[in-house]
Length: 65
View 1 (cartoon, helix red, strand yellow):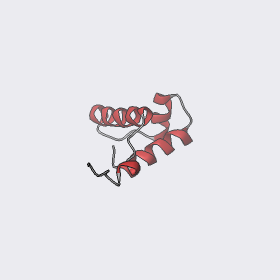
View 2 (tube, rainbow, N blue to C red; view 1 turned 90 degrees about the horizontal axis):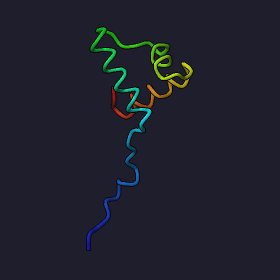
View 3 (cartoon, rainbow, N blue to C red; view 1 turned 90 degrees about the vertical axis):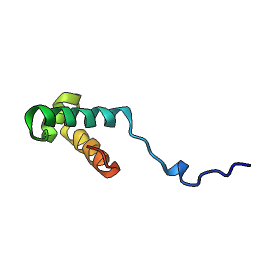
């Protein structure tokens, strides 16, 4: 019998929106040589600066961009 891996339930994969933010940040940095502001991320996503900040904070916690 195969034993279940205990930590699998705790694994949280990034959402599509988080992937979109990370890709935008990397592309922006590669093109301009600097990180985008929260305002620039929000404008790209079409959301509020607060939502953009939350997405960026979540990505940073997960070890992304």
